[in-house]
Length: 255
Image (cartoon, rainbow, N blue to C red):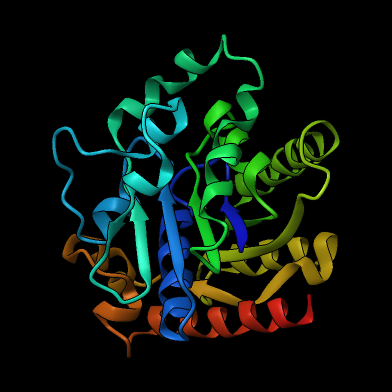
């Protein structure tokens, strides 16, 4: 089992879209996949058409220890693709964890019990570096960073890499930066090209060759409760995510 956190301290960069579409592609090639919606906004839950029910076990319950991870899992409409949904209560989890010993390892201990059940666990992180994100990074084998092609994103990326290295030093020596994915790329925008050039210069082959374009169909898909790969397979956005999934799998084979 491999655990991958999809993280960026900035919101709106494509974390959720990247998470659910990589998971969709993996499930399509017979991999058993679990997505953990670890953002209080619950965008991954909504994007997969999972209705949030009162009293439903969620990633919040898993994190504070009131429910085993296995009991919070729900099946999606896609084969071999499960989800631990989010809850707005997750926003308060940090306060509840603060007095616990080894509070950074709570999620990791819970996920160890799923070792035999999944090939991949993908964690959709919130847009901040708090105890929730730290738990996700401590649990993970690697991190994927979606990066929006705009100037301020570069500054945030540098800070995030420092955070990842700090967590590697202090809590999780095996944590690796698996890759950076350029999202919301516009061929007509010179800034997009400049950002791409800068990121590739500094991070080299850590940057995926595939870039994800700005695409209206990608933005529409969550309102229908479907990944873009299911919602409109022929769209430019879906084809980009399909190519990204192929590149992801190639990298996995090389590892």
